[in-house]
Length: 532
Ligand code: MCA
Ligand code: AMP
Image (cartoon, rainbow, N blue to C red; front, side):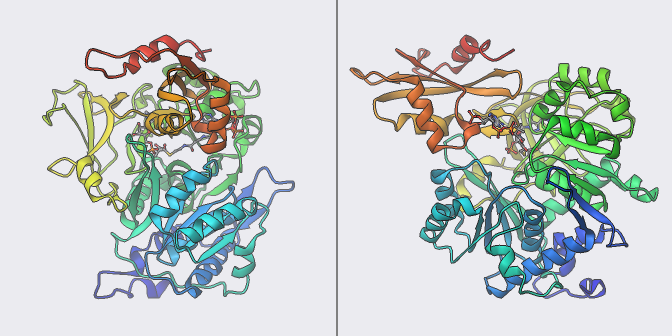
């Protein structure tokens, strides 16, 4: 790849090679490409990928995509187990100027059919075990190319890519061209594809590069080692963690699946860890987690779900480190973050002040600003805020205010020093182990079952997952329902993390005078089930 040509390659359409997110990430690679970029932590023997392997592997994959002669901006949908090759595929899609569409491996046929039907990807990559039903679903959605990729580096994707050259000039893009679509479920039950541009992702990665001290380490001539233990089909693992390491030329210790004991064992050679609160709770359950074991660590970051103050404090006592909590969304990448320095400025129970360049405000339900410290709806603005929902202009318009701030659906307050505290959500959403579960979607699946009159799904506290779903189901007159059978059916239809942890068959749902289901009463009734 000829780096010198990039900045010259502007076109009249506002496209440039320099605007391609891959080019910016590539600029962060170390000068010595023979250094190890990623080391796998849970393969039979460690696999070591050099920076040159990331560059060459993603070039071959980008050339394969190029050979398909797809229109610019084609979607490449990917549902595969976590692997370094899957990360290369993401980079290849950026290089090729297409749009990456990652899908949770837990999604089943009905969920995938919706995503593929909605996004109409030109290319689908799946694991070999799912090829039968995924390819059928993909061809029905008009997809022409279906490849397989497994986490043992086998599958037709790599077989085909092997015939392509290992150099590739990234495609010019406009900053507002799409880089990725991330599906997030909606309160009406149907998922919405959040369209993220090269500018959205790059601006956020650059802000975090400074805000979390990666840049200082690089300037000091050092390097970080990130323990990467999150899935790479959501914002946290794919963008926040991977971009952080790539942009700073940092080594990654790559876990395909989170394992608390193995993670603690590798902490002495790492400097940065990112997790959802469940990961911190599980790490605290490891007797080997000690202050000495964490002595080499620079930073622990938490996000995606509320971190309990109790976990924050226990972590401080056990390890001597203060977890830095931050807040973001699929639609916006990262919005706020506690301060990196001084460590004493990280406040438990808050998500910190807005990141540089990000606007955060709190408005009441009439659209008026609240007094400092008062609670209201959190609204945001900035170069990180997405372009809209894929093929849903009306929904997009509804989610923005007249002056074009995005309504997050989170409820919170901003205190006098600018720290944001999230106190709840106006959207009916359960966050379980860092994954979002929309009750309306689950209720839809339950209500479709024979003999069901209606149902209500609520979130209740859970010692491990933070929050989990519980369902109350009412039978049609004259019908008997079996809670276990409902659970078993749900497990065959929807992603396992969405399946309520308990189903209760009840005579009726509590309603208020207006006839609205009182979910707060159900939450109250079941709050002790899993609180541990
Ligand atoms: C697994 N199970 C769950 C969850 N995960 N149940 C509820 N919530 C979950 N999150 C259930 C499975 O259904 C299964 O139940 C049983 O637990 C074991 O499954 P397994 O896959 O082995 O679980 P695990 O490997 O222990 O996974 C737990 C986990 C994982 C490591 C906490 O959920 C995880 O990696 N979470 C991170 C999610 C994440 O990256 N979120 C970021 C989103 P059964 O046996 O009954 O089937 S990005 C985001 O939110 C924004 C932008 C942000 O701010 O970052
Ligand atoms: P998603 O769109 O799936 O990425 O989920 C985004 C949602 O996760 C946000 O709207 C918040 O409700 C929640 N979230 C993310 N980070 C935090 C945090 N640190 N504390 C509380 N909630 C969070």
